[in-house]
Image 1 (tube, rainbow, N blue to C red):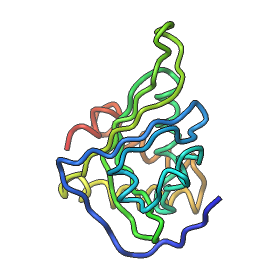
Image 2: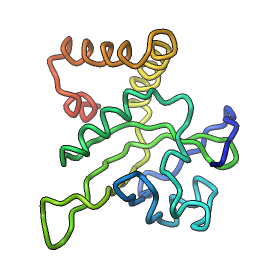
Image 3: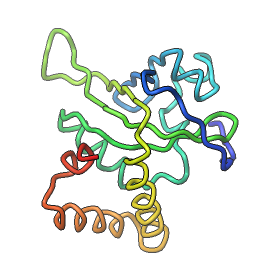
Amino acid sequence: MIRITPKNNGKAFEKNVLLVTKTDLKGKITYANRAFMKIVGMDESILLGAPHNIIRHPDMPKIIFKLLWSYLQKGDEIHAYVKNICADGSYYWVFANVTPSYDSKATDKIIGYHSARRSPTKEALAIIEPLYKKLLQAEKSNGMNASEKIINDLLKEKGMAYDEFILSF
């Protein structure tokens, strides 16, 4: 597994660019488009077969991935803001839409996952970045249950489901 040292250097990509990956059921990358390879600074020989968390930035709260996997394993799509890491240690933010991929012969059989990511808005990141810092701090101090409680309390306070909240900005 590649170990990347994070740097405080953000990268951005154009709002009309779509970063796409596909994974198998275990989260191993089976496809990456050129735009994705370009921003992460890794080619197919490194990415294909690698776990998707090869690009997971340590600033990401684990609760977000717990939510993501719980949605996907039920066969539901999910939207999420994610901070990823590049091969050079830089980071970039995405607004991701992740969906299950189904067997063409059996519409109820999930065979992998498809993720399409756009560049997030500054307005969304102004909300997400401090929330994720709070979630990460709670996880480091008191575990993932603490960050899950923060998310659940926030959603209850707003009277929204997770998807409604994420799509509201």
